[in-house]
Image (cartoon, rainbow, N blue to C red):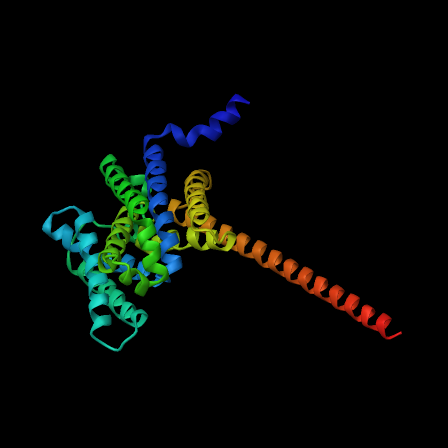
Length: 300
């Protein structure tokens, strides 16, 4: 029994695993919170665009010998601002503009990486490297997590009004542009924090799957946020834990668990809705039959 417990607890005996658990859990919180807003606003592609656009910022940060987080954040905000500017000054739809902007920035980043000789591993940027994080990385992720939590607490209601009815938000005097760009800034910061944990490619799943899964289970926003946090944190923990024993990459393992949860909830809600629909049809038919019998009795 003691040997079995030692095996179960063995991942926590290594310092690099303790750091990995910490950073994936810290990243799971802001991604879950933002996923609720992104799903409701229909901004899934915006998260994808910003996550791809950070690559040139990382390479430029390496050349200038500044923290990668600053370069990635600057590139992410440039992508968001460029998308907003082009949308306001053209007839092209936002999703089309985002497709052009983020693909071009990603391509620019790849070109820079081939021209600049560096020790940056592309695989670590694309898919994350939680096993190689430092306490500084964990500290940065903690600060970003705290910023997202504070924003959700103090500006969450205003942001909900802005998401559901932009014109009403303007009419009641809410700073819609500030809310808009604050959400984009927090999204960029969260993606920066997630680079080490799951990478720039897989982070989009953490920014969508928890909110989308929770959305299928409830129609109340507070409950949706709670479920999204539970789903994100639980899957991040068990994905990291499972990857230790099956010797797989932690980031993809976490995303696979999130996907399995999404498929499971989708199947459950589909069966439940089908059952409720059939039950309502049966009740309607029974009521119609009783009404017909009453008509026949009245005629006779």
